[in-house]
Length: 312
Image (cartoon, rainbow, N blue to C red; front, side, top):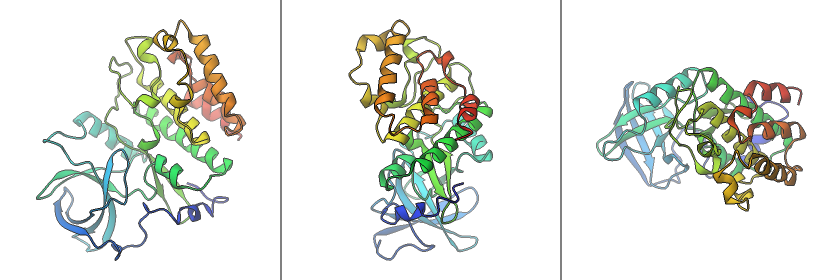
């Protein structure tokens, strides 16, 4: 939770079109489609806006929702509807997501069925995902970025303590919600690739955040992959740059044989971090170096990272 000295942080978002203020459906959004939805807990009336107020990699539209039992309005976001009867989440990933929800590091997702479609919904995340948050916010202070970075390391650490690897850590899969007028909370989202397995032979995740594990071995360690992706995410948080775009000039042959060229690649990584050293808090430099290792077994453990930045 963000408290003082972040009291004015919420003021930075007054211009955000993705933010829905107030308990009622806004009058100026006249094109809405009432639709009764049957969910497990109760009937709900979704008011679906034609023009999405919230867009990201997974959210397709915003919906106000009237709970039939109490008759009050709540705010929910609808997830991408099911296509051709295919489930968005496998049963395994659904169960892993629910475990993360029970631990307080994911938002509750429920299935819905209506006359025209079926899919999933979850409580509306006030600021959308972390990508939107950074795009829409005014420049955040270093203090705010450090706070966010610490919370993200802690959230991923909690997930790993549940013996769950997310395998798709990225800006778009971190939801940012508000608690009161000056507080923020962060949740993991989209458990499509999540696993309890300590090793895997499946390459998955988003290209911009992938390590070179698949070129190192045919067997991967999902939790260690999460750590590399978290390093890429933190780099973007501090610099507003994408890691992959910073290393496009790297020799392709190095990436094909990363262990053979490990020292050269990590020297290139060091040059990238040095170029952006003015934007990366000094205490986080060893953490980023530790996360962005070619050899998965050499990556800094999350508990070690938390200890490194604990005095910051």
